[in-house]
Length: 194
Image 1 (cartoon, rainbow, N blue to C red):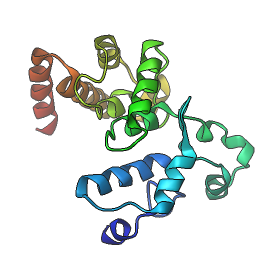
Image 2: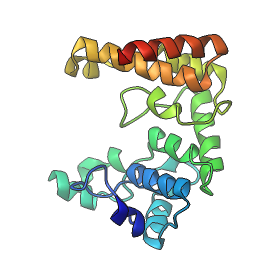
Image 3: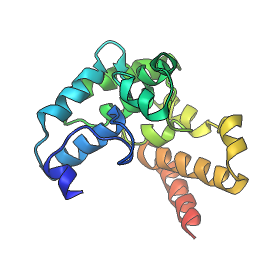
């Protein structure tokens, strides 16, 4: 980790995968939190992925990830589109210059009921990163009521699926819920840890 922090560059979600904007944003947030400098390569990578009118793409170009998964670049258009979950990560990074605009875009997508996490099975896993008060109440309620898709449920043992639902809802309620919801969420989180 010291090597990455000492010479920050775009990163992927593992050492074997190509760089992506979401993982690189996590690195950038870590650098900011630790008071460490960024790098021109990391900043340029994130800038290339950012589209001010539509959001941030996970992969600015398909070439590296296409080679990694051995698929034609033309098959990866979805991976190179703006993704709401990555937008939430950027919007939660208030220290970054694009964060305010990202939050505005995110709120607009929520108001139109268009927000959908691409890489995460539940929207609350990313929206819970945003500071308290950043989300309208209707969006919090929608996310708390969200269910796992049938495709995700089919791949998970039922107890794990239920645990993930409880965890995601509780995260949202802890950050964005009413006082009563926060107390309920704390109890549910405690129960998950037992």
